[in-house]
Length: 291
Image (cartoon, rainbow, N blue to C red):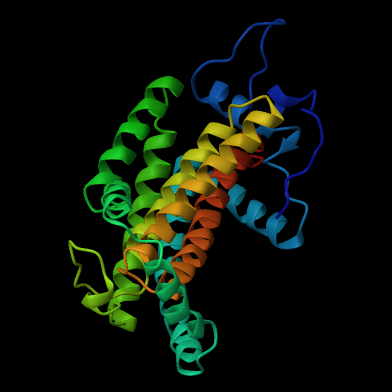
C-alpha cells in the first residue's frame, strides 16, 4: 500500500480539505490538520496504489458515510487490535516450531554467552538504568509526556488516540504472547539483577519500545519538511528500539529470539495503526458522495 507522489490537487477544497485563502495563510482545525498530515515528502498518504489498498480505502469511505471519519479510525483500530492478538497467537505457533527445530533459536545461547563477555559492574548499572526507561513504569511515563507534548503542539487529539491505541495494542500482544508461549527466561545465574520472573516471549520492553518509538516517529515525520530531518527521526527511533531490545539480551533477561519476535510483532502492529490513520485521512480528503 504505497502512497502516491502526486502533488496536491487543485480541487482540494472540493475534495473536502480547505485550502489557504492566500499564500502564507494557514488552515486551522481538523481541515488544517488533515492538510498538514496528508503529504510526506511529496507522498500523498490518501492515495492507494495497490488493489488491496484501494479496496480498503473504498470500504472506509463507505463506512464514513454511516459513522464518520473518526468512527472509521476507531473501527479500523478495533479490528486491528483483534488482528494483533490473532497475529500474536499465530506467531506463537510459528515461534514454537522454530524453537523445536532449533532454527533461529540456535543463536540464543551463543549470543547470550557473547553478551556476558562484555559485562562489567559499571556497564551493568548503566544498561539496567537504560532498560528501565522501557519498563512498566518508565515507558508509560515517557509515552504520556511525549503524547502530551505532541497533542499540545498540534492542538489535536490525534497523537492521543494513536499513541494510546498503539500502546494498548502492544500490551495486548505482549500479554497474549506470554500466555500462549510461556517460555522460560534465561537462567538466573546468567542474568543481571534485579531479576524478572514472567514468561520470556515476547520481550515486552522490545515490543513496546518499538511501537511507541515508531508511532512517535510517524507523528513527527508528518510535520517535517526536510528529508534529512525525516531520515534522522527514523534512525533515532530505530536506534532506540534496537538498543532497548539488545539491552534485554545483554542483561540476560531475554533470549535473542524473544527480542526478534517482539520486533516483528511490533512492526506489524505499527503498520496497522499507520494504515488506520491513513484511512482516516482518506475519508477526510475524499468523503463519500452523498446520494
